[in-house]
Image (cartoon, rainbow over all chains, first blue to last red):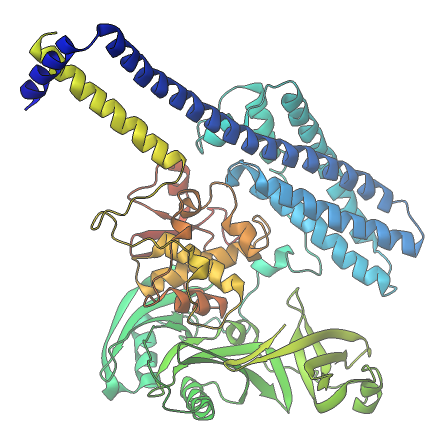
Length: 459
Length: 180
C-alpha cells in the first residue's frame, strides 16, 4: 500500500514545482515547532504557578511562626488577664494558620508529621488555656513550664524556617525537586537538608497533655467498660452464636487478630435467612461485640422507625446492653441508623453511645457500632447535681421556649465528662438544646437541631 | 528517495504525530469517547452534579468521592476502611484537621492527583453507604492512618509501617511508633 502512495507521490512530485513542495513541508514543520513551543510554555507557566503557591505558603508560614514564637515569649511575662486572653487567641490563630500553610507544601508526611503535631497542639493548647483564663482560672506553674518548652521548640523551628526562607530567596531551593524526593533517598544538598531539619527539630517532641481535642491522652485512652479477662477465639465465637441464636447462624469464620488501639478478634458471619456477609469485631478482653459491618440494598420501607427502634433495643439487650434510650436517628437509602445512649438513674449518658443500623424492609440489623459504649461505660458514682433544675433554668436564654428538661452527662472535646441539665426548646421555629453545668451553673454548650425528613441532625 | 527509506520516514512521522497529538490532548484535557475503551463512562458534569441518593452534608459527599477514587472495586468493608483512615487523620494532630485538608494534602491520595477523584459515583454502588457508615463512627481499621496497595506502591517507607489489617488489595497501617 505504501508503495502505491509512494509512486503516486513521485508522480505528483514530478508535476509540482519543488519550491511549492518545499514551502508546504516548511509550513508543516513550522506548525509542529510552534505547537510544541506553545505547549512547553504552557507547562512552564503551570509549573511556575504551583511554585509560586508553594513559595507563598512558605513565606506565610515563616511569618506566622515568627509571631507564635514572639507571643509564646510574651505570654510568660504578661500579668493582665485581658492581654493574656488576646495573646493566647493570637497564638491559637497564628499557629493554626502556620499549620495550614505547612500542609500546603509538597513535603512528605513523615518529614512533617511531628511539626504538624506540634503546631496543632500549640494552637489547641492555647485555645484551652484561653478558655480557662477567661473563666478566671490562672495559668498554673506546670502550664508555664509547658509554654516554656513550646517556646524553645518554636525558636528552633523559626531558625529552620529562616534557613529555608534564605534558600528560597537565593534560588537554591526548587520545590519540584523537593516534591520528587522519594521517602528515603535524600541528598546532601543544603536546601534539601534544610527541609529535612523541619522533621529533625521535633525528634524530641513527645507531645502535650492538656484539656483539648488533640491532647496526647486522647490516643492513649483505655476502654473503661472492659476488664482484663482475655477470651479465646472459641469463646468469642460462642458469644456470637448466643447473640444471633445458634439455629440461625450458617457459619462463623475466624479471620484473625487486629491489635492497635483495641485488641480485637475478627470474624465473618453469615446468617441463614440473609444473603449478607457480616464482618464482626469482638473485643479480646471480655469477648464483647465491638463492631459489626454489613451492607444491604433496601428498596422499600415496610416498617416504621419506631418499630426499628424497638428491634434495635431488643438486639442490644441480647448483647447484654440494656438500659439504653434512643436519641437521634437518620435514614439513608432505606436504612435507619439509630443512636442509643445509656441511662443511669434517669441521667442520659451521652458518652456511652451505641449506633445500630437497621434495614427498613425486614428489620434486619445490619451494623452495630459500640465504640462510645466500650470506651466509656462504667457505673458512674457521682451523678448528683449541686444546682437545682429551677436555678439552672434561669440561666437559659429567656426567649427559648423550653419543651423538655433532664439531667445528662455529656463528653467534652478532651473526653472528660460533664454533668449538665439538658434543656430542649425552640426559638423562632429553630430547635435547640442548651446544656447548663449542673455543678457550676455555667452554660457549657448549645446545639442546634436540624430536622430533615430523613431524621434529626444536631450541630 | 528509496522505497525502504520512505517507509521508515512515514512510520516515524506517524508515530511522532500520534505522540504530539496525544500529548496535546492530555495537556488540554480533551477526551474522546471511544465505546469500549473506558470501562466507566464519563459524563460531562462533574461528580458533584451526580444526584445524591442520600441526604448528607457535602462533607460526606467529599468522603464518598475519595472512596470512589481509591476503592471503587473494593468490598464494602474495604470502602469503610478507606473512609475510616481519612477520618482518623482528621482526628490526628499530625495531619490537617479538616476533611478537605486531609483529602487534598499534597501527594497523599493518588486518586486526587490523577483525577479519578472527580469521576462520577455509580448510583448503584455501596460508596455512599460506606461513607455514611464511617461518618457514623465505624472504624474497622482500629485507628489506622495509612493505607497502600502492596502490589503497586513504589515507596519503601510504607512497608516499614506496622500493618493493622488487609482488606481486598489494600493494606492498612500505622506508624511503627505505636498507636498514634
